Image 1 (cartoon, one colour):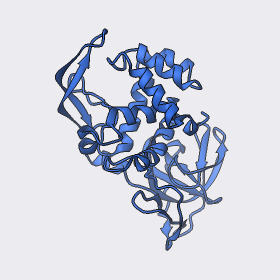
Image 2: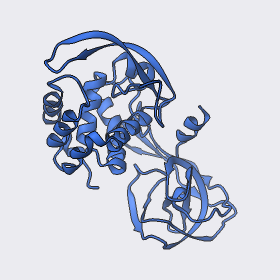
Image 3: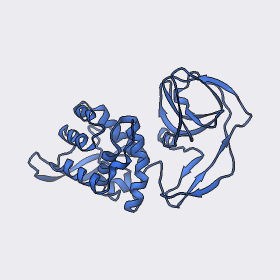
Image 4: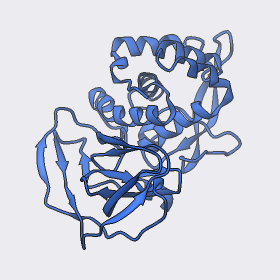
Length: 290
């Protein structure tokens, strides 16, 4: 449980769902360290300590970067370690410590008083909460779905449509109570890398000809909506039966058709329903280039 809580430690710049303002907090070095480090792998620097902040530049593999202090941010598995630490560079942007060679001691960045600016759309980097309106649910889901696309290449539009359909816009008991927005199940009590437990729920299973019957199944429960999105994307990416879908990462309709063929859902109309949602709400506009 502690590991999952550590993943949820956010950076000094947060986007709040309930209010129409964005809380922006700058960070400055304490005891001004100046340390040169090298990165392992091509690495994107961001305006805040998480991948959902705007990318400021790309740092080449083995390039030298000068850093000054550290903050707690998005938990990542990188080339050198797994950590929530992000290092602030002398340019004022941030790199994940998960991609830094060596482990120099850096002072904590000092948080300065916040500046409140208008936010056109409320959003939550941690993902939806299960108690939102449709518009709030979509706005809160976009950053998590886009992060999943950057990490796994699963189109954002597909992920959003699946979250809407599987969770009923976040209002299903599974989503509202246990932050499972994709109906992810526990098989043989295996809950994967992101879920915290398994819990039984009543559900329906359909056979190949569309005949459905009630049953009880064990579903994964999560500490945050963001972990639910991560688990969903990684499951599609890691299972060989969905490999054909990744030939169509720029064609969301065909992507989900291939995922359906791979056995993702027992509903024979599953792909058709998702394409209808993607079209109705123009979810394609949220896809990112990866």
